[in-house]
Image (cartoon, rainbow, N blue to C red):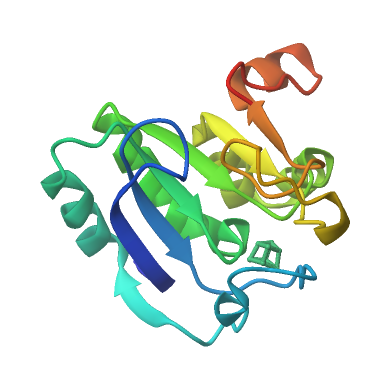
Length: 168
Ligand code: SF4
């Protein structure tokens, strides 16, 4: 199965807690002012890769604690990323997904799109909402602006309300 990829980082310490393999999905429609990765916006940019090959690269990284899906907008490619996320979880790794959608918007999208629901449920921590330049804060852990939240997905779905992570 193919994924349009902007790039990867094999060992990152800035895209979530612990050492992480980061997959940057290509394509984004949010057009946030001040976006650091505008080259990821074009859905036809980047390169097409097989998610099976990405999984092989992830398996080769023996020291990582987890995998982060970033972008771009990962939920625009929810089908291949849900496949990859499922395999990542089978390895005992945790999964963080960044999105420019709000939690509330994603829940609505998940009602219409099974792959969006799958990717959301496979995600341990969701960093939600678009980057807002006026709310930029360089002191925040793992995100760029104060409106963005680090959400514990399973707990939030169970409780029916947003529960932010302790390290947020
Ligand atoms: S969601 Fe992320 S990649 Fe997309 S425009 Fe906003 S900051 Fe850039």
